[in-house]
Amino acid sequence: MQCNRCGHKLEVVRQCRRVRLKCSGCHHEYQIHEVAADLDRETEELLERYTCIIYD
Image 1 (cartoon, helix red, strand yellow):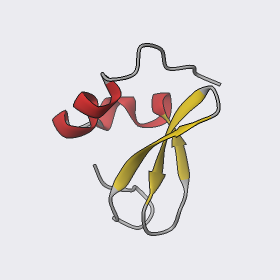
Image 2 (cartoon, rainbow, N blue to C red; image 1 turned 180 degrees about the vertical axis):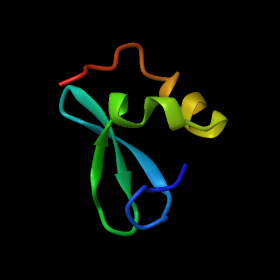
Image 3 (tube, rainbow, N blue to C red; image 1 turned 90 degrees about the vertical axis):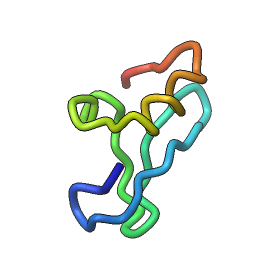
């Protein structure tokens, strides 16, 4: 999945009690609900590994 700001790859980052997507280029963090409609299959498979995703 690509960053909306700079086009670099978004990586799944687990932080204390939350999961975010972080750009490898500009380091902008996205909450899952911000990009949920644009998730690709690879990112969905990574997120499926987490039993609970907290929307904060």
